Amino acid sequence: MPLRVGLLFCLLLISGRAYAQTGSSTVSAPIPATTAPPPTPPPAPTAPTSTPEGRPSLVREGTGEGRPPRPEAAEPPTGGVYAEFGRGITMRSSDGAVSLAIRARLQVRGTVEVPEEDQEEDPAVFFQARRMRLVFLAEAKEQHLQLYVQLGIAPADMEADLLVPLRDATIIWTGLRDLSLKAGQMKVPFNRERVISSSALQFADRSNTNAELTLDRDVGLQFFSNDLFGLGGILGYQAGVFSGDGRNRFVEDYGLLYVVRLQAQPLGRMDDAYAEADLTREERPRLSLGLGGAYNQRSRRQRSTHGAVYRLEGFDQLHAEADLIFKYAGLSVQTELLLRKASEARQEGQVNGFPVVESSRSGLGYMVQVGYVLPNFVELALRWSDVKPLPGVETTLQKQRDLSGALGWYASGHDLKIQADYTYTFGRDFGIGSHLVRTQIQVYF
Image (tube, rainbow, N blue to C red; front, top):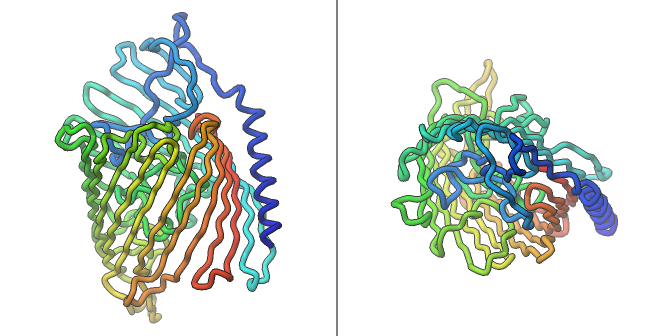
C-alpha cells in the first residue's frame, strides 16, 4: 500500500511541474495605459486583513512577495489601466487619489485518498478546482478608506448547507495609526495559520488542528493597529466583536463573539509574518509572536463559528491560542497551540416534540511546521498536527494526529507555484491510519 501511494505521489508531482514549465512563458502581459514608455505595476492589490504586522494600513496578502527577481521599469502613469501577472488589473484616477484593483486566483488539485485497511474501501482518485477566487480592492487615499470584496465561486469555497460565494466584504478606515477600523464580513483575527491566506501556504491546505479549533469568518466590527505606538511595526493588536454565527448567517436572540489578538516582532518588523515559507531568504533572523483569546456566547455551531448547527440553544465557547513564526536564510518554523472549552458537556431538550441530546467539542491541539527553501525556489516542508479531547472534560472530539511532508516549486513566488504533499492520519494507534496525497497548481493573476 505505501508503494502505491508513493508512486501516485511522484506521478502527480511530475505532471504538475511539467504543466507549469510549459505554461510559464506567457504569464506576464503588461498593458500600458498610454503611449508613454512601458510602465511598471502600481502597488499590488492589498488584502484588507488587519492582522498582518508591520504597516500602519493594509498589507499584501498572497501577492507573491519574495518571488524570484524580475526586471522593473518606471513608475506607471495615473489616469489609466495597468495589468501584470501577479498584480492583477489596476485602474487609477488621473490624480491617483482613487483606484480599483482586481485579481483572480485558481487552485487546481488532484487527490488520492487511501482509507484505513479495515474499512474495506478502494482508494479514491479525483480532481477539483479547489479554490476559485475573485478579489476587488477599491481605495480612496484622501479619505483613508478601502473597500475589499472577495468571492469564492468554486463549490469547495462554499458551505454545504449555504451555497453563498461571499467570503469577505469589508470597509476599512486607516485614519489613525493606533485605532484603525474595519467593519463587515472578514476573517476573525484569532490564530495565525487561519489568517494566513490560502494562497500563501507551504502545503496544499492548512493543518487539521486549524480545521478543528480555529475561528472562521464572521460579520462584525474590529479595531486594530499594525504599528502600535509608532515603534516601527514591533507591536500590533486587533480587538473585535462579531455575530458569532459564522459567514453569511444571521441568527436572532443569540450571543456575540468577542476576540482580542496581540502580536510582537522582537527582532524588528517582519513584513512576511503572514505568509508561509521564507522566499526572501534574508540573512537576518525574523520572529513574530502572537497571542489570541475569544469568547463566543451561546454559539450554535459545533466548532463555534463553523461546523454543524446545533438544534438546541448552543454552548458558551472559550478560545485561547499562542503562535509564532521564525524565518532565516530560507528556513521557516511555525507553531501554534489552540484550545476550545465549552461551558457544558451536553444539553438536553426537545425539538418538535422529540427529545434531543447534543454534546460539545472541547479540545486542545497544536501543530509544528518546518520548511526550507533552496536557492532554486524548491522547498521541502514537514508538519506534525495533533488534536485531542480536553483532559477531564466530556466531549465528542476524538484524538487525531497527522504527519505530513510537502514538496513545492515557486516558479513566481506564491503567484505561480506547484505543490505536492502526503499526509498520514491516525488516532491512538500509529499502525491504523489513512493516506492522503495531493498535488496542486496555483495561479494568482
